[in-house]
Image (tube, rainbow, N blue to C red; front, side):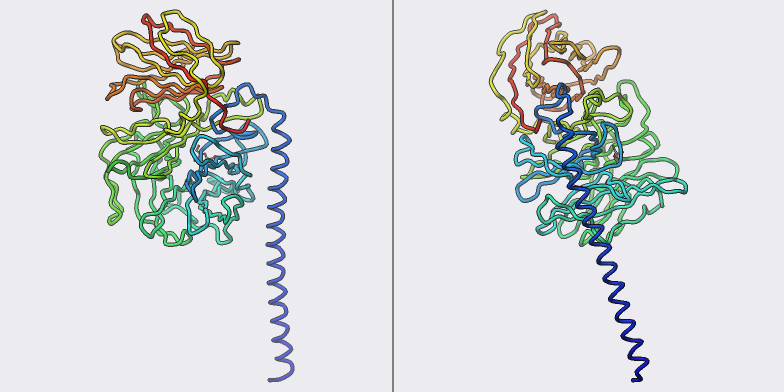
Length: 498
Ligand code: FRU
């Protein structure tokens, strides 16, 4: 070989090596920038926490340490621990560039705050799921990026990996799914699960004529995804976009859980800005076809319940939801934080309906019985900020229980009218949610009150209403019913960070 050509080859090798070094160095710089940003964020959160007004802060519901929270994300059970992430904007108590906050728990009751799991870079980290792969916990989420051309945003699916379920590294091969089959820019909120040896993902999207739908994908390794089928599509009256899908087997049927945007109000139904509900049907992993059997039903009938996500662990299916709603005032925002998650509930399928009951472990919050006995008409009782009420009443007569603050603030009424057989949560000034209730067994009401929330579970969980209410100075209960009710009330202890 001539000298010149050897020289040329050496030049090529050298410049190749140089290019490689530059790429590695750039990547290392980007990684260390990201790590620095993470460390600075934790420092910011630590300092900012001191400025928060605690008056409405929950004692046993997950809430952001500071700033804004929306959807629960990545609800998963990994190495004996529950992981719950959430849409998080630390720098203000309004929605902003999305991060993933992170809490963990061994029992779904006692929660520990973990470092922020994902920070936005060029992309915002929108909702998604999490799954164990080997020793790792893997997050699958939507990268939402703005664009200069119409439709001015773009949504693709990303992965992030963690060896310790605490520090997450975005995958270098992102995106793992670059576009929806029909090219719709609305393509988000991947739920991920494993069946047999394969991973599956359900992703929310829409048709070009504005019908919400859910897409099903399959992968051997979480990186290469194959589009399988449309699990279901709106019939034209079920919203223009389906967000935050979940898809799972429950008591022998399949449940498609969705958060539709844009459903029209119909009487008592669909009164919230967006809905959260489910379709029951049959599904086969051989054909990938879902056959709906029972049409869309709301899962919770209160004012504030959205973007719910489930996890299966120890043979049970648990759910958690954003305990707020889009497009309504978030009263605690003036205090430096906004949003929380509902108490985790266990799901069952009973008479073509998904029932929700507080997870059993929540009884461990009970910290002494404060009332046990008759409460006569017009009787007034006072409690702390966190209370569980067990209420027995005669459902042939009216029930009317006023809950307000010992020092003012907002109030709510829990009502039952035997004429129309409806359970009502009324926040005053016509801000009412109500639903028919035909008890399948128990006629008891179980009510969870926290510093700024009411969760009413009727009977065996066939009707549940979750609403944010902001009383001041602890709760006060007035029995405005024409009947004496039986009440057992427990004080509840703190189980989340302040
Ligand atoms: C639902 C939702 C998701 C999206 C996220 C953004 O509340 O709109 O579809 O991923 O919130 O924060």
